[in-house]
Length: 230
Image 1 (cartoon, rainbow, N blue to C red):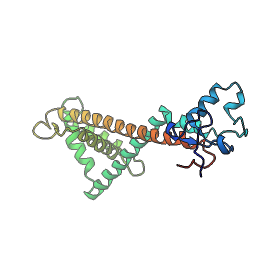
Image 2: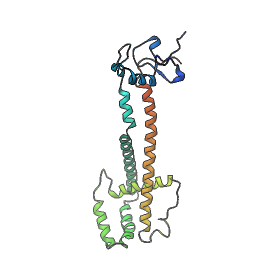
Image 3: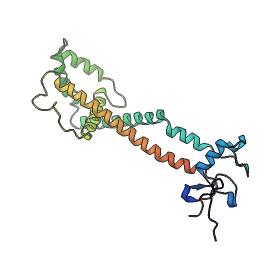
Image 4: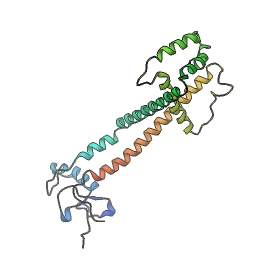
């Protein structure tokens, strides 16, 4: 008959939590609850109990602490969020570049002639001057992506995020689209709101996944021996 596994500290079974084997001890002192072990490490009068077993003197693995610190780090989560968001924008920029080439490379002309003219009517600059500056700016490219394609990629991400909010009213289309700067201004607000929506969604995804990985790490990293029989 197999011996019923018990925690060597609280003498509780699996109903009190998962039992692990954190050292080389065997027999009745083989298994322990992770919570009980951590409490003992903090409360023991023997300073060595914090990093090694009192019976077999095996030194515990502290990789869990490093993994937990990384997974709990807000800085790491924010870095992952911005990397994922930037990657998404770049991918959408390449999609815009592909579509631009497929339709004869007219995206720059469309934006220059229609989009910039709406701003020229409200500023001291002329449409031709704005267009010339716009063309000069787009003479620079990064891996084939020009600023106009990068901007289009950001707009695709922002509009997609805006649509995911359940809002389908786009006032920059239709009869109000060409009235002053109203259309471009509303477009800017929509792109910003949608981009924030996408950022929060990405952050929530990574936060959820890090919590799952953290729970798994806390129950497995200190494991040395085999799991107790179920």
